[in-house]
Length: 140
Image 1 (cartoon, one colour):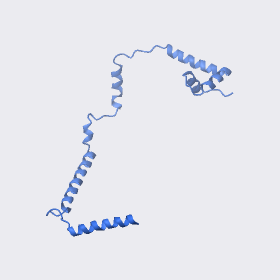
Image 2 (tube, helix red, strand yellow):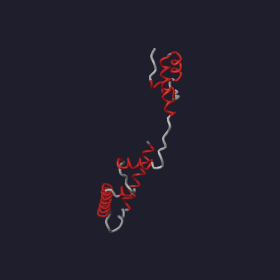
Image 3 (cartoon, helix red, strand yellow):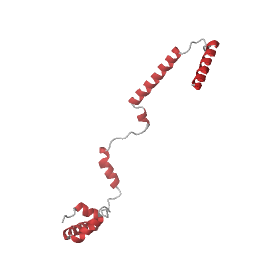
Image 4 (cartoon, rainbow, N blue to C red):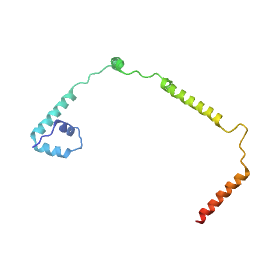
């Protein structure tokens, strides 16, 4: 007969539902495992009988004094991260690229003389070509 491990007996004692019926059936047949479960119960009974010491009102302050030097330092305010060198470089690069794109658009845009006036004959010819093309496409 395979005996249950201490972890399985502890889980059974704590009310874990996984395999509970199998462990209960095993405990009815196995005296060794029943004795081990009783030993675990005795340990917990002894632990529950022990008095819990009162830590006192200054307990929290003492704990913080002991662990304060081990904790990582936090930023005091959220806006300091906003002005981190990497973010400032990225923002500056974006502004410079935007300025270059604006300047290039102004230099390579349409001539300063105003809008281009299309030749009326060319416009009429294009409209005719499109209309004929659509008619031929529908008639196929």
